[in-house]
Image (cartoon, rainbow, N blue to C red; front, side, top):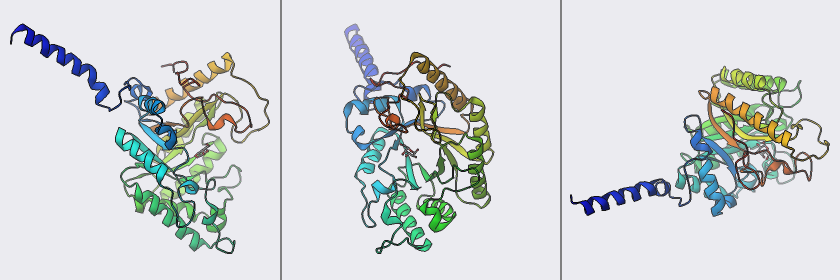
Length: 359
Ligand code: GLA
């Protein structure tokens, strides 16, 4: 090889090597040092999204830089995807799943059976009377077969039942229409139908306040009964709508240990860390406050603690998903106090990373 030829080959080699990370992922502006890359040896890092966000190139790039798993914020819920008995609205979920397939991202299905965002037609007959248990279970089965069946092999995990356990200490299950019509059977049946529709999918029971010692005991009781009776529940989703001061490390670790003692895998399915101290169950009339430097620091410390715990239990935790992308928009902006802004995520309103998470 003469010298100019060698030089050309060398130049081409450098060029190809420098382009490789760009073209290998099909995204011209994507880099590979996002959040997901720091956690590659631990677990996938997911985010709740809308189909609209995925159609916006700036948000696409941001998502592809930091996340390697998607959850539909609303699109797959029963009401949005199955608004009438004989009508499914697939468009948004199809778009989310297609985006994930194209970019090699995981998709968690959320969710198949919940007391909220369920369509009214599901529970009533044409005269406006509540349907029988047989009718409701048949409708649930048809729903689950249709949705899980359509995305079999593309959605690797499903939140089968969401929030069925009560917040009252002396009551196991929430008094929802599901419960009023079917008793606890709707839970077992939902898991059975989902397993039949996609035997390979990992099936989750998903709930909030799972670190609360009273509620987690109720959830444990339900899940133990299901495991003992061979109901195909494989994992628990800790929603993780947390606060800067809650849960404590002790509560978080004891929760993880409690559920893994049942042989269940764990995912953190809806993570955010509110800058306010009002949890789901507490006073909704707290005064409006703003993000102070002190509160920002407390939030950073809380994030640091919880990720330290996640890393410690990586053997059991096989996914961590954030609920929304950045502080630009969070479902907590108006909840539980209307008109109050929250800043619960790792990226600020300009989509810039907040303080680094400590090692
Ligand atoms: C629950 C649900 C989520 C979402 C949040 C609030 O945690 O599981 O799907 O609706 O409430 O946004």
